[in-house]
Image (cartoon, rainbow over all chains, first blue to last red; front, top):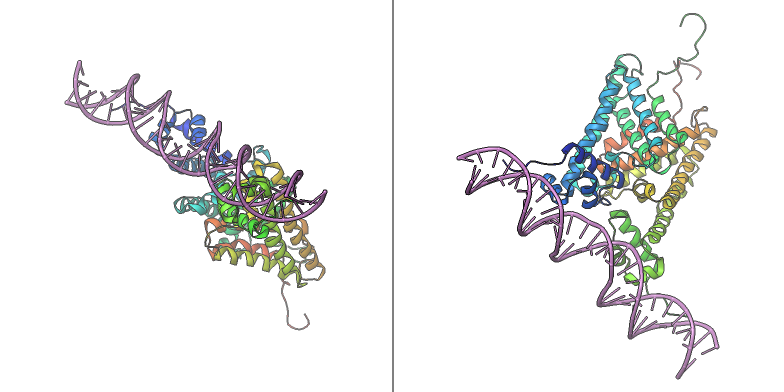
Length: 205
Length: 205
DNA sequence: TGAATTCTGTAGCGTTCGATCTAAAATAAT
DNA sequence: ATTATTTTAGATCGAACGCTACAGAATTCA
């Protein structure tokens, strides 16, 4: 019973994502949000409770549509090493094409709002852990498949890759240069390459 | 001629650094600033011109007292490899001891304000380049001293280390855990180690 | 149809924002 | 002493902030 919502909830939350993503939490006003969501201020408070709760919802939406989509898509091929390489390559391409320099909503939130809000901090940490788990799964799969060194430390390298990803995102917002961003990533990818066989001789391998 | 300043300019700018550092640019109000600087609002505008100009001055102060001090101190030993290791170790220790999770003012600014302000963006990019130059100098010195692989790519690895540093700072604000932060750094430090000699035999080395 | 419930637009709440004005206070040069 | 210049404290500016009250519109129950 009661009056039905008139606005498209999915379009609305996408509008909120765009706002928070482009301007950050603090710099986004409730009026900005309502306008980009195509609703009135009262509807915003009625449907989401307030600015902070809406931000949490926007984070979840972003994580689903951006991070998890990418992980699922790249991990589907069954080529673990390529999945990791493609993941980072895709971030670089998107960063270079991102003329507004919006970066990644999760990374932006990890630096800006997470330290000041314990609850949101836990949410963001959970999303970052999902990315790290993606790296770790594919490192272990790559090692099992013989594509990576047998003694590779999946814990340390997956954590390292998460750090490199975050650094990549930060650097891309201030110095979006291809040579620079690829320089950040390349040594990390080299970690997953097989060690060169020393003194390969002609004849039998 | 004219009335003399009553406040300590050095204490004042330090107060501004603390404010921007702890709360970020947007969330810091001119009233917060004036209070922590020990001056009135009118004096703030008289001495610095406004919030944005004060932020630029605070950035410069921070870079001098924090980043450049650390670089000068660690690079003085003449042990290039140890300088890089100690640099990252010091960041980890400071991050773990930083109960307010303020992180690094330069990194925070690189993600938050640089993308929205071209002029400040160039300033921040300049500071980041100083850090990268520190890494590169010490990689090349370490290579020359025979402490690092002869074929190490100082451009790529210094850029990689800058990325790792930025990622470290982001991660420390959301997940300040020693195991995690050291996991981010360790594979990067391994890049600078000499390759193990294959099949060392007894007798002559 | 009447009552209950929910959504929406408008208006406005009190607060705070960055910035400025005014006038008194303090100093240096004349 | 007079004048010129600068700093100070305090009040205040218009605008924007997050949020809410309220009345009307729209819908499902009885």
